[in-house]
Image: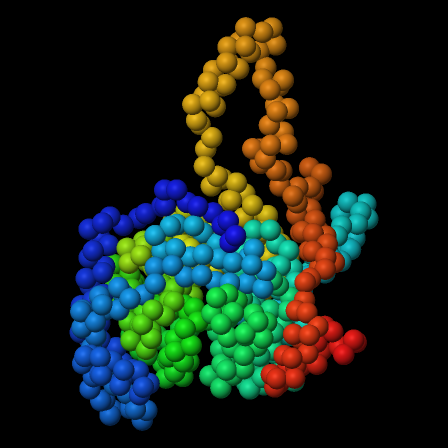
Length: 513
């Protein structure tokens, strides 16, 4: 049985049916004229041989083609894209079923950051207050390592609300190179969580090694096809409307192997996309449709996911403003567009602007997490632990996020207001109003352990001080102390024998081998 996720019975929708149709048609118009700039020769040839308009542009030093994608081609390839995508896992109970017609939301971690944020608690003496001591958290940023990635996957394995894992830190050990980064980040993730693992590729040359690793873990090529325990995310479009050469090449090869893949686009309203909602929606939808079209032309039936990572520019620096209200609006709109096409949606929420956990972080994260979850995207990259516009990862923040998502999951439970429930309630009201105390306390016992009541905030202090960070820190260490189901000894031996470039430190069975 797959993971339950959250079924959103009445998804939040911002656009009307007429507005959705306008965005759809405007995207088709954009793909026809002006079309896209394509810096990948093979993609240009695929579009040309399939009936697209392709012309060479020689104004730049790099070979480039103008690609015009006709409406008929987009519509035809959309029809061939699967409406349901299965994402497997080492533990079959962690399988995810993404049905484009069903707004069942799965919460996912990620994405890869350069900075790991350590937290330590230091004791200080108040200058005022008679020498009283106070313990405060201190946050120290540093470069991420392979050990950090293992630690992140370890904790995420035990976070109850987390359904799947996107690697959270860019491994920057001295031994890591462009050639061996992919195999190490995939193995570190797969070996420390039994949930589904998604990642991008650093270099196309490592795709076969990563796929071979997954085949060994799954039990063979056919077993991996039945249980795709890895998937990929590619941002092959650089906004506005440009196919990047190397990422497009990677995208094509992943599609040929039939593995699940996210077609992701991340325009910034105000710089690489129009600032108004209508404009960025027309553009991001066109960019995603272009990727989906290419994927289906490469291999009909490729399991593609409609990916949306739109942001708005800050008006002071023109940097990303993930905490802006508009960013949530764009993602809700994208969830509607994906549902319009009957495709699973990879959406984004919970990304915030602050560099450390705190009040602003909590407000920005909860606001977008609530709204985007309510819109019903199937695969919600909800930024567990991410700070500073996705450039910093903090394990403490991930633990805090888990508590917040428990609240969201409880809120989205369907109400129990059936005929029997109402009849029982009326009976209780009559009994209580006829009593001397006129209190319903005697009826509480029956529901106390039924799961119908929400739990108290797990990091609630003693009422005299705010102990949220300290209590979350204890929870983080408790999760790290729990065991993890690593890949078995025999499979680990085969992986280290057959896959070049793996760091010996990642071999959790090294003492026995």
